Amino acid sequence: MEDIHKRHPQAIILPVLSFFSIALAIPPIILHAKNRNFPASSLIFWSILLNIFNIINSLTWPTDDIQSAWDGSGLCDIEVKFMAASYLGIPGSLLCIFRSLALVLDTDRATLVPSRGQRWRNRFMEIMFCVVAPILAMITHLVWQRSRYILFSISGCVNDFDESWVSLALAWIWPPLFCLVAGYYCFLVLIRVHKYRSDFASILRASSSNLSKSRFLRLFFLALSMLVCILPLEAYVVYSNIELSIPWHAYSWSRNHHKSSWYHIRKMESYGEVFFDRWTPVASGFMIFIFFGFGRDATRMYHTVCWYLGLGYCFPSIEPPTDSHATPTPPPGSTGSTLVESISSRARSLFSRPKSGTIYIGTCVSRGNYNDIEKGTVSTSSHLSHSPSVARSVPKKSRWSNLPWSLFNRRPARRDADGTLLDDLSMPSQTVSTMAWASRRDSVNMSESTASPQLHRDFIHVRQVISQQSEIKIHV
Image (cartoon, rainbow, N blue to C red; front, top):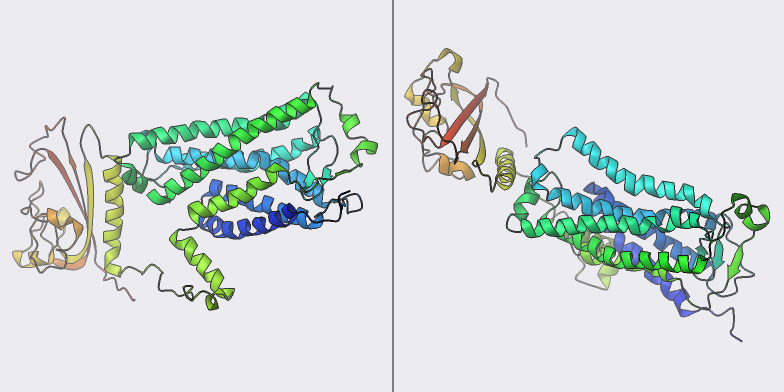
C-alpha cells in the first residue's frame, strides 16, 4: 500500500516552477503597464494569479492525506471564482491583443492622433473582453455549480460543474469562441504584415501606439504561441466535458444548491498527478520571459533585482545599478528638430504610396528679425543674414546648416502676393516659421495669380510666420 504521507515529485516541482514563472513575469507586466498596454498586462496578470494559486495549493495539500486535511473553506471559494473568470480572461486578452495589432496596421483608418470616439471605442472593447467578460463568468459560475468545489491533493481547488446543457451554454462554449475570434484577428495581422512588409516599420512609427517593430513582433509571437496552445486545449476540454456529462439531466437550481449537497465538499486523492491545466500558467510565465525578458528595460530590471539580492558577489557580470543607461536629456535647441522628425516620419509613412501626391511638413524655430507683414513693410537687406528661412541659401558656417531640412534651404527669396519679402525680418524677436509643401502628380494646374514665378508648378507652398516680441530665456 502506498504511503499517503509521501510527498510526490510534482508536489515539489510545481511550486518551484510557479515561483520562477512569477518572478520572470513581473518586469514585463511593469513595462506593459507603463506603456498602457492593458490587454498584455491583463494576460500576464492571469498568469501570475494562477501561479500564485499553484503555490498555495501545492504547499497546503502536498500529499494524498487529503481526508484529514483542511477542507479549504473560504480560500477555495475565492479560487474557483477567479479560475472561472480566467477561462474567459485569458482568451479575451489574446483577442484584444490581436485586435490592437490589427488596428495598428489598418492603413485605411490610420490617423496621426486618434479621435476621442476612437479612443473610447478601443477602451470599451478592452474593458468588455478583459474585465466585463471575466466578471460575468464569475457571476454565472453560481448557476452551473453543482457544489462549492472539489478538493484534490496537490492540485487543490477544482470547479464542480453541473452535468446539464446549462454548463455548456454558460461555461464551456465561450472560451473556444473567444479563441476563434482571436484567431480571426491573428490571421488579419498576418495578411497586413505581408501586405505592408516593405513599409512595416514606417507604419508603426506613424501610428499612435507605443509599439516599435521589435515590440510589435514579440507581442505578436507571444500571443500567437499562446493561442496555438490554448485553442486545441479549450476544444479538448469542451469535448471531454460533454463526453463525461452525457446523457444530460434536467437542470435544477434547488437540487444543486440544496444544503445537503452544497456544503458537502468532496476530497479526492491525485496519487502524485497534477491536473494538466495547472501547468498552463507555468508555461505562460516562461514564454513571457522568452519574448519580453531580453529587452533592454527588462534586462535592467533583472540586473537591479539580482544586485539587491546579493548575487553580484557570486556573478561579477552583474554590475550595480546606475543611471548611465538612462536616456540623455536632449538639449533645448533640439526639441524642435525632434518634433519635426517625428511628424515628418509619420506623414511620410502614412502617405508613402499615395495616388495624388506626397505631403511633407517642416518646421524650424529661429531667432531673427521681422517686419509687420500685414502692413507690407519691407526691411533692408542688412538683416537678411539673421533669417534662417528656407527661401534663401544658408552660409556653410550657419548653425542651421546641420539640420535635416537644410537641403531645402537653397531656394531664392520669394515675395508674397502683396509684395512683402517673406525672408525680410528686421525687428528682433522670437520667430517660429512653419512650412508645408505638397507635390501633385495628377492635377497640377494651379492659378498663376497665387503662384510665384520661381515656384515649380508641381508644388504648393505655404508659409506661416509667428512672431513674439518677448525674449524667451531657457535655464538649464
